[in-house]
Length: 125
Length: 409
Ligand SMILES: Cc1ncc(COP(=O)(O)O)c(C=O)c1O
Image (cartoon, rainbow over the protein chains, first blue to last red):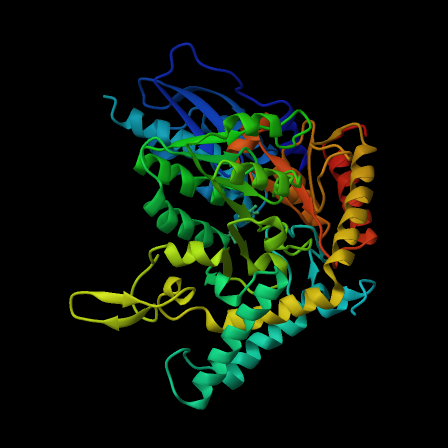
């Protein structure tokens, strides 16, 4: 079962960017009704319109939680335009495995939350 | 009589492998596998007898009609309905329950009336009643659970009143496996002149059903959970109740005379079967029931219990695993569990990597999971073709989880 790599389990057990931000520019909470997974993500943007900081809290399976942790590392410093272009393939490459269709919504939960937050941020000046 | 020993052979799907391992199928509460006889009955119907029913005068139409109606008789006998006309074919259990909510409910439920459901219900036996109550400004009441996760019968008695019109209850929970005492529940409802609809989806293929002895007013189930094809549901209703109900869907087949501006409906059960039904699957469904009869429901029930107990013992030996029910309760066939620190989806994925199919998530019972205070559960569910080796394979998968997540067992 190569999806449960050491990296993934490490991120699951010790998530990076865990917590909340004091002054987020955007926040989004996503819930996976099929399994009860949740992710709440806070994003702060710099003047240059890059991701200045990101933090998340959540509950759920290893894929959704480690995926969000990996995605947080990956997003730091990226421009908003770069972030908007992230897809399920981004998640697969971060997780280092091709996620099965049944687990797609788990793996993509964090991505959905980040993209949802970005919609708000795009409207910022 | 068929023997259970090597019944797996009669199910072609067990010839395949999953992730290089032999298939161990422990997701029977979702749907069951099909014996060769059912698969060939389906193919025979299309190869030899295919035609529309109740219409043509030609030989094929008569053969198709005969096969469709024969299954109705077989189902009636299987659940001991008084007459075959008490059996309505639908697409699935969900549609059967909707049929009652939309026709009987439309006619008999008004403002201030009360409908009782149990906390165990699958969404299929909850949402139709929520919607009906909202539309009619009626009240939906819920029978809670005891600490052992059985229905709280004392609380139920307090919920019953003059205003109770209908009690909707499952014969067996698809999450916990517990089986409410239906006879007692029905007697108490009838004493208050309320009707009872039983959701038999989980029980009907695992244990004998006798709708006359139960005295339930409606009994709903799906063919696919009892070795039959998908796309066939059954609604049993007492004849005098069905006769009094308006049609559900309207159009062809369910009418006697159609004038330009009004129509006259057929007698029951055909009044409730508008349009061309799922003829081939209904015809093949008969083979599933005959298969169950040949094995014997008493043997299946005993087999379920033995496997359940073995799996319970296997899981309970691991302190990291929490089984959601005790082995002193009414649960059988279905075994729900959680592992501290491992989400049920991860459990199911790792089981699958060992060829073991189980279900994880909310199992279409979200309010029940909220009551149980767990975000989701993993579930093994057994049927006649499962074996003790299957449980050994599940144990192997469990050990793999401990290893991957570095849990000390
Ligand atoms: C207890 C119970 N009721 C109803 C249903 C709904 O059956 P179907 O999806 O075939 O309509 C199920 C199926 O999961 C069930 O387990």
